[in-house]
Image (spheres, helix red, strand yellow):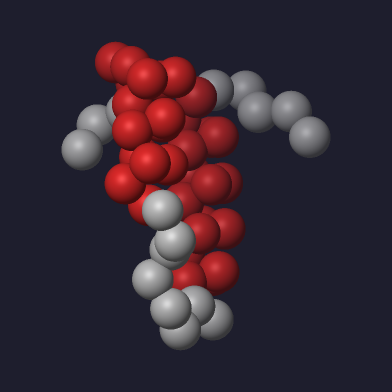
Length: 48
């Protein structure tokens, strides 16, 4: 699958996560560690 813009990728990920979270019943394990890794990898692209 190819995405023409970064916004297209973000929209696709957002929609996929939105659907997946409907089935989640427990918090994400090690979310702090994951978030720190995202921050290091995506630096200026990750807006919190």
